[in-house]
Image 1: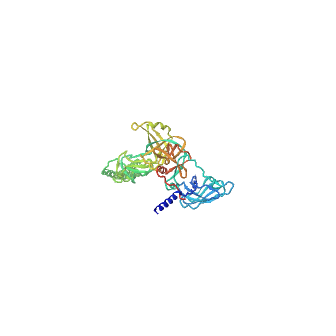
Image 2 (image 1 turned 90 degrees about the horizontal axis):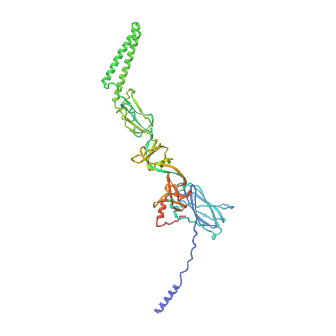
Amino acid sequence: MKTRHLLSTMLVLSACSSRGPEPSTPKAAAPEPIRATVWTDKGELFLEYPPLVVGQKVRFAIHLTRFSDFRAIKEGTCVVHLNHEGASEEVFPCDPSTHPGIFGANVQPKTPGDARMSVELNGRELTERFDVGPVKIAADSASAQVPEENAKEETIAFSKEQQWSLDFGTQLVAEQTLRESLRVAGETLPRTGGEANVIAPLAGRVVLERNLRIGAPVTAGIELAGIVPPTSSASDLATLQLAEAEAKVALDFAQKDRERAERLLAAGAVPARRLDQAKATEATAQARIQAAQIRLAQYDATRNADGGEAGGRRFIVRAPISGILSEASAIGGSNVEVGTVLFRIVDTESLYVSGIVPESEYSRLRQLSGAEIEMPDSTEVRTARRLVSVGRLVDSATRTVPVIYEVDNRDRRLAVNQTVFLRLLLTPSAKSPVVPESAIVDDAGRPIVFVQIAGEKFARRPVKVGLHSGGVVQVLDGVKPSERVVTKGAYLIRLSTLSNQIPAHGHVH
């Protein structure tokens, strides 16, 4: 019984082992979608769709980006157009966008053959028509083919969702004529005639109508201060008072003498000359008393803390040029000597920038064609107004030669004696491709750029750079005009290539 059971078990196992696994029916692989990228001045269209077959409904994935900030289009209506030569146009509206930047459309062509496709967008953020170009519509699925892409270089995938979520931007490679430049350190200086020391023209007491602070603007001819000169006669009060009293007594005597002379002349007792002498003596006495009173007033003014008016007898000190006060040493009520510097005025609307050029670069100064000043508070550069002078003597201590340019500073962004960098522009070069400085990425010591081949494909290009000027870089080799390079987010694309794990790529359609 036990033997019979063992035999039956072996027969069952043998039967099971002889039956192979049931064959599985392979699933047909979905065709690779056709992709198209269209750039305009205002935005970008990145389109994915299956091969087009007459009568078959296919789903279009439409990705729309605006170039104002390289963000996804959130609102708007789009329409897919198919234009056949000699046939009516087919129009397929898009569904409302459920994800920012992505629109879907069901397209079911009715006419086979060649057609021209375009996508039209109308919205508050962007209104544009993207011309996709010629497409083929197959008569049946068997004849539908996906165009082969000729891979000329290795590309890097970077999805639209990644681009929209990061600080990303691109720009066309342009052609521009650059000038070779020489960057040197420099210093801002007051221009010739743009600096003046206001000195005391005579000794005396300073009178200030108002307190002028350092940095205050002044205009040419404005009153800065007054100076009351000291009395030229004895400076003690008793002597001045005595002189006034004597003048009064002399005037009283002269008046009485003149009256007496008038009576005698009327009586015929004296000649007319006697009256004339009396009048002259009276006028002299009158002048002496006026002078004595003025000296007394001047004495009082020079002893007052504020200087006083001194009876109007003071010298006015005026600003010789317009500018700002860089120094103000005058103190109201203080005594000053002749030649004392009261104020210093500097014109800051127009400055000189003196660049220090090494003597080894002196021969290149023959090619000078302009200059730019790098503003210290930003990446902006300012064009110099004119060349003032090129030094002809080498400084024996620093072995440098000065080059001086004049610069417009009416916005007051440059201070006097400020350290800046002066970019000396030499003879212009030939027209060549240029890219923004932000597009250049340092890849292990070698400059590279990332060129956008399609909506989500980028190529890493080593480049040979040349001149730098005004925020752009000359590219001698590596890119061509009208190619689109990444100007924002290029370093992030480089980091994605260094990752050992390739992120999953896909869209939410």
